[in-house]
Length: 474
Image 1 (tube, one colour):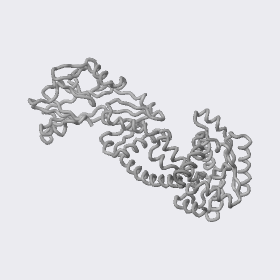
Image 2 (cartoon, helix red, strand yellow):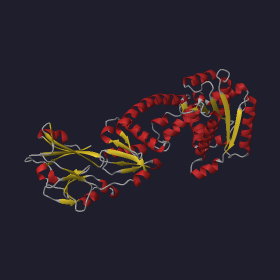
Image 3 (cartoon, one colour):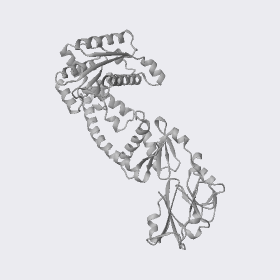
Image 4 (cartoon, helix red, strand yellow):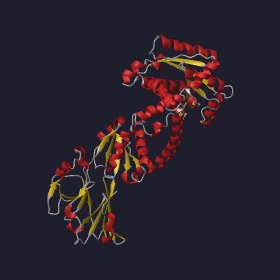
């Protein structure tokens, strides 16, 4: 077993010469085995060991005996010993998290602090004693929680400065190793308490699966996870490239995803892009589930102004041709200016380009193009939500790109029936806080185009149309 673990560590570049290794040792079989293994490997690799023991203050005298056991073991093995005490139950109540989660947070925080104090700017690692059975439990727990591909990959042998040398061996192998060494260990009584989800998997579910389904179920689950992890690594690299093309990050850290570019990707790449955006905004993905990702993806086909709340106070909102994802605090403080831009189309002032007259105006942080086009070009334009064609001769005043004003209306049928813009927004269920941001193409108070929603019946081209005006937003 020692040789297998050593080869596993070499394969994953876990330890280098002169490294300082902070080892979490509870006194249980797994962590005691890890310490003994690392101590044996010191004969061939020149690295330093610091043992950290954390008393969770849950089991009273039993916890104190665990600490004393680890102290004596470290003294025997001649390694540095650093004990800590954390009231995990109190921490869980204060942070409103489970006792298990509070314990995990406390452990890794202390591991990092000890490593930082011990190595300064030099190299260092944190070694934890997760083994193959732990991996199987973690994978199933993530599946049951609705995790994505990343969760099904389970724990990685190396993550940042954390190493897991025992992921290649089973719990039964660990116990056999300790038995051959004559090495005692402590048994945490809470590991027998099936009120904890992980304990139920360990003590009930896996024994049943091994006895009634497949005795190698743990190895098979972990082998599957390894294959998925290899595929996930490739998908992740492709998603990074795709994200760089469609995601624009503003100064206020708002991610603006261009829907046209975003939609070119396969669904799995889209999901990865969304996950990466959330990770960049929140710094974690622990409580982000399938429903969160799919609710954001659904915005691709929703109306302008549609919005969803995600975990960690993140909000995603549908724009004209983009999905904006940002922290809710930024979203709430963001204000919009009600401004307008005239589009002046006069033959004597426009630039002649390929038999078309072309004028470009910039406003609302978007480009708007207006140009005369030919009849044979229309079939390429019709059906595009962000390019519309109008009968130019029906325009009475100077066109404007702007937001709504008092008295605005739109013609909704060929018989000349009009509807107030306010009523249109209500009937279309446009959120109240979004109505002042909807971009309009206006001819006085008559609206030619409610961008992202509909255009006026009064300006549509007909058989008698002589001048076709194409307006594009991108």
